[in-house]
Length: 448
Image 1 (cartoon, rainbow, N blue to C red):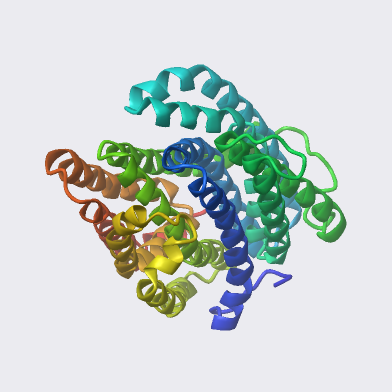
Image 2: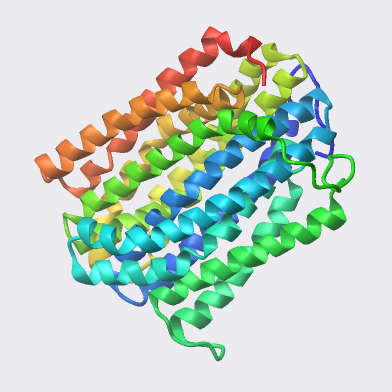
């Protein structure tokens, strides 16, 4: 879709035109994670579990940059809907400077804190050492990943999402080749094991950044959207974006920190439970991509509709997106449930790990009853510009989730599948709060 839409509502086809490229791009990003997991599953159980902890530790920090980019996307979407195209470039350039500075701060902060935090949080010395080896190389990816998130905000906010598919295909191809070479020592590259998987992902992110820069300069409407010039620094503009983004940044940081807490709790049940959870997490990354693509589409189209003066079209839009989400996810989840060993077998050939992961996979698939609608409505709350409200909702849902996990894991030492039922708690609370807010309609007159 090459121009802003100002219709009374969006048809299924129009929603799909925006969502499908996002879905493919998110799928490719998750395939990068799945590729690392698949390669490391052939290295060892310790490496498989450590990559989960190291990967989540990395993503927790990355969520700061992604949270800022969410705010950028909301502002760009609003300006795009209002037809104020030249101001998109101003937002983009201010965001680029901020994200590069943030990436540098996160990089050096990690170098200082990681040697202290990892041994304090991970009980197994072998897992801790492997996670540290992974992160030593992965943290260089902050710079590339933060910039990539900004480009994604630009293309999603302007509803020009097709480029995301091309970019992601290139990134996955680079990651697969580099994983093969750096994990096992093929193609004339050194055998680095878990560190090689991390370096491969970092280099693949660099390839993605290079592609975005070249494409944006050559294939995007560079001048119309004000990207041909670097504007003078305007503190008030950066402050406006930060006023929206800061709540998404904190929300994403806390949300992923909670996910990290969950895996630390699972690690206390043993390396097998941790490895099995990493496998299920990788499957969830595949199914969750469809949910997040649709939710991201709902967020940016909500922002565009409000900018175009059509807030009444938001609720019908979200209802359609939810129906699309269930139409996609229900068949996929049923297919996975019918052949769990085939899916889990992508990550390991060890029968004991398959037995540990299978019941947990069923729990994860069932949780999508709440997850689909919860994410669509929750992202729509942010799309209205009410990121502080979204933050409050997230904190309520996460608080109940953490309490539930602490009781189930540390209190009852429940089986792994029972521990994963926390997904139901989080999804149900998030859906209830977000749906009631959108229904109430106080967001209709919010200005950015």
